[in-house]
Image 1 (tube, rainbow, N blue to C red):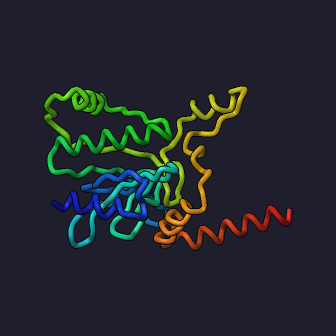
Image 2: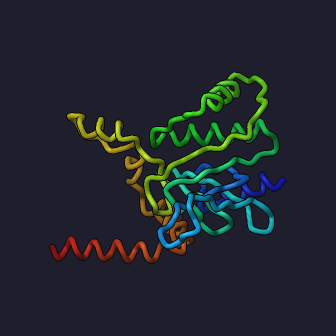
Image 3: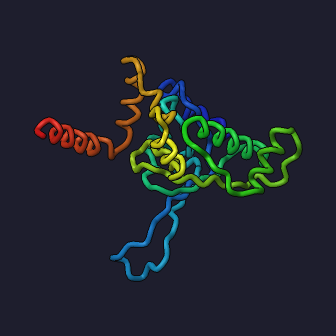
Length: 212
């Protein structure tokens, strides 16, 4: 099926240690701009998963990096976005959503604000019938880099600072990679058309630190 083909495309040897989920839609938040007088409210740019444009894949690498891709293009470049999971059935859509939320919870705090969504996930874990799995996962990205990470609430930031023993967030505890593990990740970054410019910016900042 198209869903299985999309899963296979996102879980090749390049990202063998990553977790992937097929998406039906991906919505990118577009805030209003001062230059556009006609645009009085924010809007969403929606990408559809299909054979012509390519299948949408949500990927979480073992390092904690998070991105959404379509074919060889990394799409997530904004702070706020929405995704709708794909599947062969409504039950499978919900399974993908709940599994993704569970995986995200290993790296950053995840808050499910919709009571109905909470009940659906609990029902799924109990094996009962799910009536409505057309749920949308809202994720707010803290970083604008291609590896977007969900925003950390201010409460958790303050709590971390006030601890006597400083502890880095879980996502940064997986950064001790071997040389063999860095290769696939670098190739992944090179797929992003904005990555070369990002490297140049990093190089400039490093020079400032050396000169300072």
